[in-house]
Length: 64
Image (cartoon, rainbow, N blue to C red; front, top):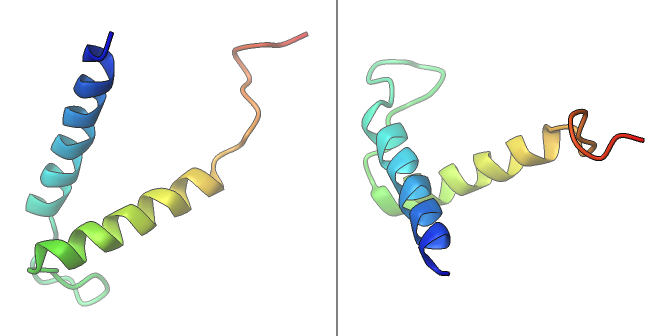
């Protein structure tokens, strides 16, 4: 019963680690963030902003 939640959590952490490791090194518009706690904080804020920008209504499910 808990395995889908655990798998989702590992997937989410894996995406965050991948994003941390693939930061642009010498981009003046987006500087490299070395401190992992600060990166994690900013990553969660960016994820939340992306969720708010998405359309709330689904076009594929629950259409009447």
